[in-house]
Image 1: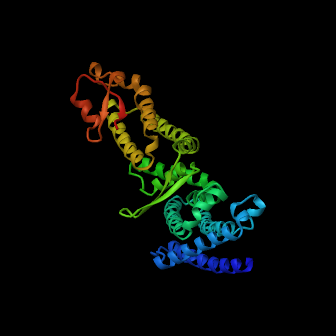
Image 2: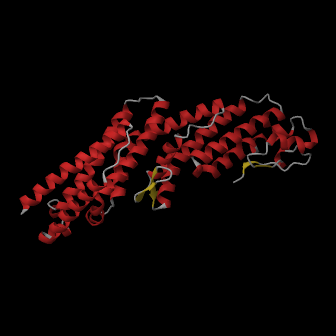
Image 3: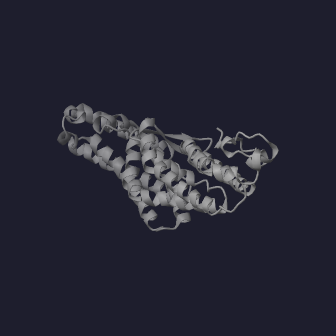
Amino acid sequence: MLKDFQNRFDILEEKCLKNARLLKNSLFSGAQFQLPKDEIMYLNREILDLSSEWSIHFPRTAKKQSKEESNLGIEFKMINLYKLCINEFVAEMYEELKKTQNQKETTLQLVAKHYHDYKAFSYWLYKIFYHLDTNTLSTLGADLHSLSLETLKTVYFKEAQEKLFRTILDVLLESRQKQLLLDKKIKSLCELFVVMGANTVKLKYEKEQGMYDYICQNFLETEKFYKENFEKRFLEETQKFYKYQISERQNLGVIEFVRWADRVISLEEQMCLESYSKSFDQIKQLFNQLFVKEQAERLSAGGLGELFNWENYTVQYLGRVSVYNFLLKNSKFTIQLLFVK
């Protein structure tokens, strides 16, 4: 009987690996590919039948009384098969990423593609192993979606975390220097610093948008990880950059400085909302400190006389109202260089 189970599993393993590798190769080559519905149903049924029959004939092993017993179970073999499929995919992604070295544009494009493709791969792989999902909860204490994320985290993200962070900073620096909006793909890299903090997720597919997304189940996990691994350093780098930029503009008059500040704040607001919106409030506070509090004395004495009192100067930045125009049109100012949600 054990031999029969092993033979059936060997056939199942071959078919699962074949389909997983076809899907992997299609995604890596940029070709569209979906598993045929009848093939998914066949593999679903085989996994369910094998698992159910094993539980009937070998209840102690199936119920996992000990780690040693679980290693003999058919569920354990199928879980390992699922992990083999996702490990092959992640390992190939990481090998590709290592070849990019420090090329920021190549890294940006590649990581954004990797993240999308891995979610797509995990989504379709889940369809094959769907009936195994409840067993992983009892056997490993995790569901298949969370196992997928954990593999991405340990094999790919942890090894490449610093490289991804530096890529974000390099792309952002170029956007700030050229005063151009960020490449929209940067959002994927920023999102990784949120999702990688999660222990439990669900993987969803938004058909209308053609997007795959990990839905984090514990907000506190992701918030803590994001702040510690991204936001803190990101704000420090932003502060360093703009302190230098402000120091380089010490000779600007008030009007010229406010014009420049207006452009900076408008750009930063849009980039923040599009790519790293979780840091919106912190960016507001930082810019209030840099452009308002630290410039109060300089600007209040900068040529507008009694009409201009920087410390009481407030602009409610609505995106369509220029700080500069507001400054010119009002003689009594309540100004605060902050973004308004």
